[in-house]
Length: 118
Figure 1: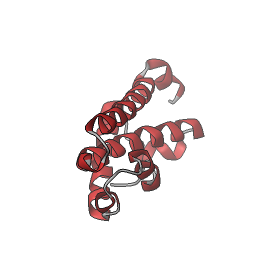
Figure 2 (figure 1 turned 30 degrees about the horizontal axis):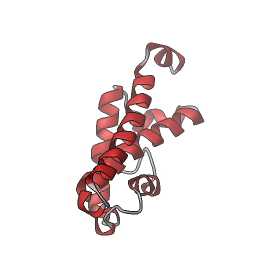
Figure 3 (figure 1 turned 30 degrees about the vertical axis):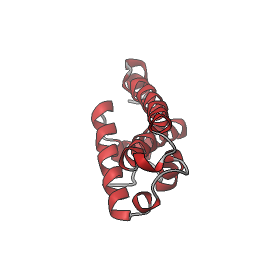
Figure 4 (figure 1 turned 90 degrees about the vertical axis):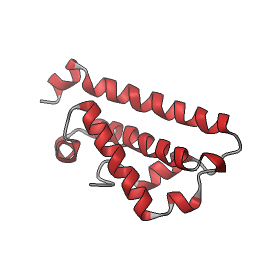
């Protein structure tokens, strides 16, 4: 299971221009990061999005893709930290991506969302 919940282009773009090209364009590494991030997202939201996405409304589909691409971008940055101008820049980018994905995950786990999505 990889690249089911977001596009590779979104994850690569979020990793930024300083991401190591040999990592982000290595299909085996990228697919593994996608698989790991999608599993992490589904575990944290407690929902099987690989099947639920087909019936979800467009804003939910977009939110899922946004959060999962954030998680994949974090993995790209972690794997190529030395290619960024400084560790502070890389860490700041990861913190922003994590904050965004955490917010989406929290929103998707809330009871009000769960009642609306049944």
